[in-house]
Length: 295
Image 1 (cartoon, rainbow, N blue to C red):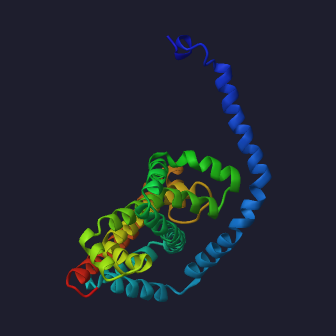
Image 2: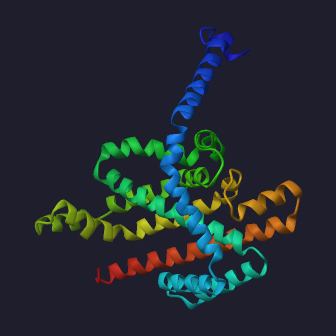
Image 3: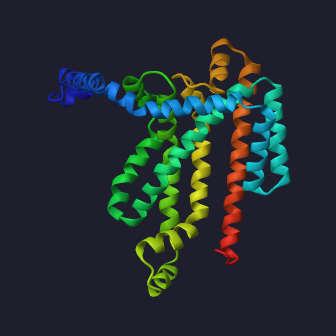
């Protein structure tokens, strides 16, 4: 027995009309505002193209030197730094350098955008319970809805290219940094906040001088998870025109090239491990620094 036999008022024709209305409404919206949205995102597109060309055309020894310096600054570990250098040398030797640089470009931009949007949203949620009540279901949807579902409206509005891919990555990777920033600020000890009040600290001074510094380990855990989730979207983003390591993986799937897919998949794993170790170690160092009473 079908559902519509039990509830005849909800007829198939009405449901089909409802779906058609949504489709027509979105098409009308995309025709009316599609060009304006493309113009709005055009500076971001130009920056992404410039940044990708910068990484791709830069001499490989310079890139490896920068990676080594950033890794050492974040982790202060010779093992992690040496592992990063060896990994990037192997990536170059196996002819995956350009794709890796393209992936680094979009992951860097996506992470920067997620941090720029996510930390203020997390602070807002921590400050106002009503904001948390409203934002939390939105984050739940962003994390659980299949990525192919929200690719449909993004592609309909902006077409195929780097910006739609970046937006898809950001939608998927944004929730962890928002949630963990909110959690970190809410976990700040009440006694510490009362002491700050006793010293006459303003709301701004309490936020930037007490809450955010004490929440930094949680915030960096959020950054770590955001980077991991952004990297996991590399293959999906390549389906809508984003260059990088996902493109050869897709080609390997369609042509059954095991070696090609395996090597590029491992390159993504290597990037994930490097980012994970550096961000985790930096977060632990920050936490230890605060606990030792130097903050």
